[in-house]
Length: 146
Image (cartoon, rainbow, N blue to C red):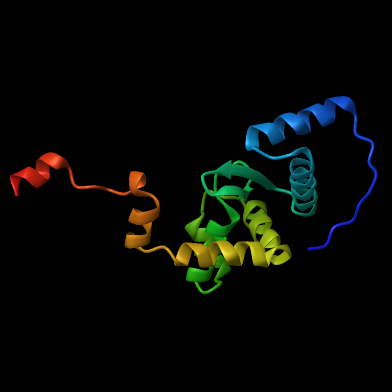
């Protein structure tokens, strides 16, 4: 994606907040500001979507649910796109929350499709290799009994 250089006046307090957020995430000012601007645009375009951080980075989440957009879309895909079954699968979500996830996917399909493809690539072996601390390991005492 191309970039454009623009001059922008930022209030001191906002600039300090961006610097602090960037430092917390190991980002320089420009990268942190661009990330915040991009997320603000996406949240404005898709009310009900927020961004959360985790081990896999920043991701679009349905506000107040803890569910990532990709999770809802993966479920929808596994149900053949059936909206009624999706509502049943997420019976605790409101219709606007499900619509927010769908709207986000409509606007940003490449992001969600990339996440779905990444998740499909996981195998038990790759999980153990890349994240041994989160995969079950045989206990030492269990191995000694064998």
